[in-house]
Amino acid sequence: MVHRLIYYLCPMLYRNGLKLGILGGGQLGRMLIQSGINFNLHHRVLDPDAHAPCKNIADEFANGKLTNYDAVYHFGKGCDVITIEIENVNCDALKQLELEGIPVYPQPHIIELIQDKGLQKQFYAEHNIPTAPFTLVEHPSEISERWTKFPCILKLRREGYDGRGVMKLNSREDIGNAFDKPSIVEELIPFDKELAVIVHRNISGEMRTFPVVEMDFHPEKNLVEFLFCPASINWEVAKKAADIAKKIAEALGIVGTLAVEMFLTKEGDILVNEVAPRVHNSGHHTIEGNVTSQFEQHLRAVLGMPLGNTYVKQPAVMVNLLGEDGHSGPAEYKGLEEVLALDGVSIHLYGKQTTKPFRKMGHVTITDPDLQTARKRAKQVKETLKVISK
Ligand SMILES: Nc1ncnc2c1ncn2[C@@H]1O[C@H](COP(=O)(O)OP(=O)(O)OP(=O)(O)O)[C@@H](O)[C@H]1O
Ligand SMILES: [Mg+2]
Image (cartoon, rainbow, N blue to C red; front, side, top):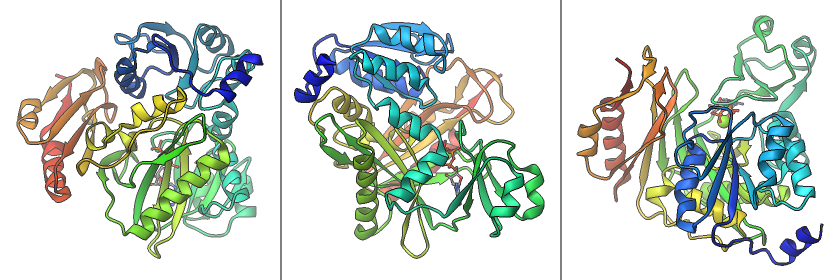
């Protein structure tokens, strides 16, 4: 407790060689480590996959289940600060570690709230944060009693990601195929655009947002295909989006990163779709495009440092490099040379040995003083670069 009091009064946690524990060893953890090296951090990573993308670049790599109390608790005991790169982790273990004086950012009670999309929606309702009208159901049989407006969207409350756990119910007849677990029923929003704002809040409560980005999704797979920065929206919408992101971060009292996914309606209103308490796919372009990257900003926030400038240095387009459909096995990158010959192209491969259809294998960022030029080049990248297996 004394330790906790000290760091609230004196937020600076940073010291050379500080042991940062990261729960999750995927690509997000990998990019956090790439930033953390510049701070001389010592990185300890926990992941259930023995070949996770962080395996070969972490100072220490532990193999274990992120949802297991003992695995998380024992891993955390040796760390100076703990953070996450995935929200599906054991929060009871993190709460215990926090009680024992180890700072955990984002705070475990916030991770716990965000793990449940139903609690998330209730939080928005309680804090007057605009979101699609919804109701919570324990079982599909409740849908027909409680919901009349079709088509609508059905979402699993827990463990949905990359669009898995989201379905459209076109009419009452579809209820027969609905998820058999606690879910949210919500209004289908005929949105104009999908936007995202990443906001950081540090230990002292300082906040900074990154400029709003616009996302284009794969029509079937619900994965981001292209991301554009800055979004083509007017300044009023941009301000509204940034203000909402800050309002949520402040209401949660989060320390670290909050990625806020939003819908821009045809009437120009913003509705919050969901939030993630971690670095996010919608901020990858910040590595090349902005003065400070989302990864460095996350570290600054959780280490009690001042936050960096988020200004756009150059417009950017980000393309997710997904495993080609029909290809599974050792990964090969077809068209890499051709793509690297284009101007302003930066490649990030995630260190995954094997590909499978639609697996996130890497991303490419294309920067250019003119966003339209970057857009055209991004299309070319998408058509040329393929992750295949022979
Ligand atoms: N109420 C809605 N109206 C219209 N489209 C929606 C609605 N809710 C979700 N969608 C669509 O489904 C996509 C996935 O939904 P959501 O972000 O809630 O799920 P997810 O599985 O957590 O996704 P991810 O992990 O990719 O962020 C959204 O990006 C959006 O395109
Ligand atoms: Mg989403």
